[in-house]
Image (cartoon, rainbow, N blue to C red; front, top):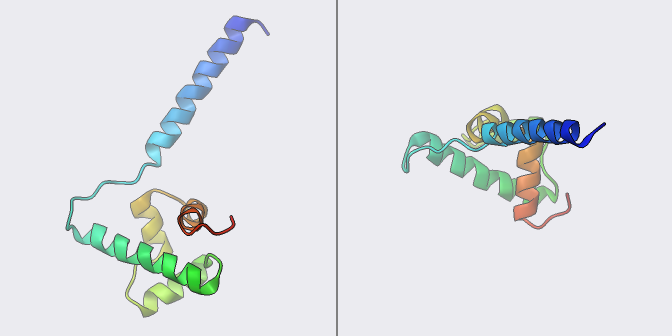
Amino acid sequence: MDSDKTRKISDEMDKLINEYYDNIQQIEYPDGSEMKVYYEQSYKALKTITQQLKRFPSTQEWNQHAKENYLLSSTSMQYISKLNWNYLRTKVLRELNMNI
C-alpha cells in the first residue's frame, strides 16, 4: 500500500471517529429543566448506590432501585446522556476512583 492510500484511509477513519464522538456527546438541557434535574438526581443516586454496593449495579438492579426511589430508569439515563450503560459505568467508576 502506498502512502497516498494510507493517508486517504487514515483521513476517512479520522472522519468516522469524529462523527462517532460528536454523536455521543451529552444533550445540553436548559438549567432548571425537569429533564436535567431528574437526570442529575438519578446520576447522583447511581454514584451513591455504586459506592454502597462497592461495584456498579446491573441494569436490573438499577431499574429496581430507580423504581423504588422515583428515579430515571437505565434506558432513560442512556437516552438523556447519549451514553450506553457501559460508558456510564466507566464514567461513574472513574469519578469515584474505583477499579474499572
